[in-house]
Every structure is written in structure tokens, then in C-alpha cells.
Length: 279
Image (cartoon, rainbow, N blue to C red; front, side, top):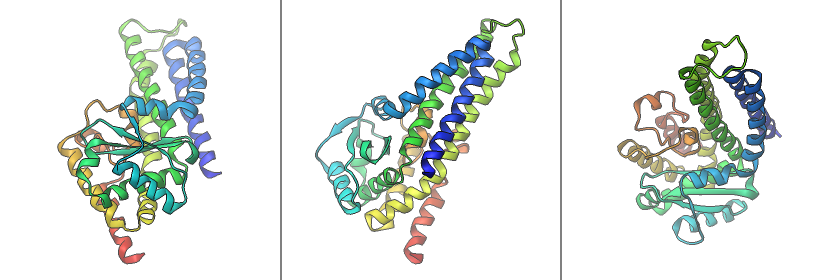
């Protein structure tokens, strides 16, 4: 019930943000267009956001191999529905979960992750992703990713409207409103992503540690992933989806790290390892 309320609240907030941006760009006509777009996106993000994100990163469904086997073992241990399992062709190690509920979920990991992790570490990572599924928060992350992309698109539209003389039909065209959309809309979307993601990551770390049976599996994997992502950041990352990954794919970029959608890695590892002594 709580996650349902959070999802409705998130969709409402992002819809209002889209409508405000549409009004600033195109007046009443722009507001109506943005409202219609928000309606389509609310429908699309609920039913198709998982497919959009997986296609964005060229995910290929698999039915065998270590990634599939580890996920199946975790689902059996935790009495969870088996999600679809995808391999991503990227060399940078990372993983995410997506879907609208545990019965319609997907987990994905890059080829680089599968290469560098031991089976125990892979179990820790996939347990983290299955904790996202179990907590029913994967839909919230997918919706945030879809809307953040749309808000970024409107910010680019505002930029073009400024260059070509504004897009409003009204005589009271307001350049300040366009500037506000260009600057504030992406910032607002980023703040929503940060609010959604940070608390989710701590909860998924704790849930994943319990599911795989040893917090050290996940803490060891997180150390490797953090180091690898700093040394070899993922190319062609859609920033609107950054919050979905187990570690930020933007961690190699100094400015992005200042506004990371993920909590500090040192704190995540500390909490996992302190759980060995306090749990």
C-alpha cells in the first residue's frame, strides 16, 4: 500500500512538472500537449518502461549460465517468482532490476560484471536486485527514469524555443519562464531521482545481504564495481536511468558524482559489514 501511494505521488509530481514546462514553452497549447504526453507516459511507463530500458542497453534474454543459475537459486531460497534474466553487452560491470511488480520483473547484468565477480559476489549483486523486486520498488525507479527522460527533452525544447524566438502563442511570451525550464526542470527531475534512489539502495543492500546469506558477498562486489566504474565508466549512458543501476554508471564524472542518485559507497559497505557484528 505504501509503495502504491508513493508511485501515485511520484507520477502526479512528474506530471505537474511536465505540464508546467509545457505551459512555459508553448502557453496553453503547450500545456495541453504536455498533459496529453504525461497521460501517454503514465500509461507507457507502467506497462512498457522495463522493455524501453532493456532495449536502450541492448539487453538479451538468457536462460542459462552463471547469471541465470544464481538468480534461480536466490528465487528458490527466497520463495520469489523467477524474473526474466538479461545480459547486457557493456564491458563496464553493473546491474539493475526493472518491471512493474514481482510477477513481471526483469534483472539485467553486464557482461563485464559476470566476468570480474566470483560466484559468491555475483550472488550478492543479484540478491540486491531481487530485493528491489521483493520490495516492489522497481516500478518507481522505471517511472522516474521514463519521466526524467521526457523532462530533459522538454528542457532541450525550451532551449530551441529561446534560440528561435519562443514557442508561445500568447503575446506575453516570457523568456524567463523558458530559462527556468532549461535550468530548473532537469534539476527537479534529478532531485526526484535522488529521493527515490538513495533510500531504496540501503534497503536493497540489507535485503540482498539477508537473501544471499552473507553481507560480505555484496560488500566485496560493491568494492570491485565502484573501482571498475571509476576506471572505466560506461559509455552512452542515459542519465535518466542512472539511478536504476546498483552503482552509479556516472561515477567516473566528477560533476555527476556531486549529485549522485546513489548513497556514498563507503557508507553502503560500512552498513553491510557492520551487520556482521550487530546482526
